[in-house]
Length: 190
Image 1: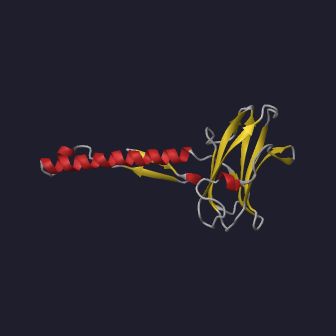
Image 2 (image 1 turned 90 degrees about the horizontal axis):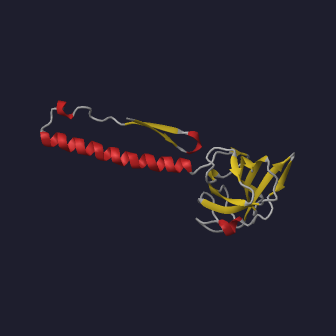
Image 3 (image 1 turned 60 degrees about the vertical axis):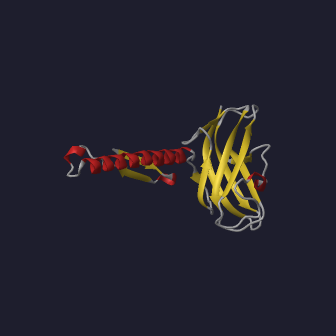
């Protein structure tokens, strides 16, 4: 039996489980065979749980193009969009999350979302730029190398045009005017 697990950022692990194909050929007594058989299948059950959790972890991450993140372990999450382009319904909203470890300490964190319209990055209307209000794992001030989890519900107004564009999500450390996170994702507004 062989399992291939997806890890974030494109790495893969391959695990091969070797199971006894014919326990009656073993040199052990009946009790020892029974013990080994039960232990092997208990580890297979445990392995299935681990595989499920890895798959769940991979499913929560959205692929993106990095555009200059200084933070480490940046994970973008947009439900129902593991592989872009993401499709957003006009007149609806979508949730977005960013998990990351900032490179620097800070007291103020600003978020921005822009959409590329022609050659210009246009700010997303109605977006709350105070990222500190939308942190859930910790609050501002924050320290370097401490995981931050930011989440926001983004409105897609019906008045927006039905277009294909590139959306950029940024997190700026206002204390030192430093870009902690910058990720780009292709989207379709329908």
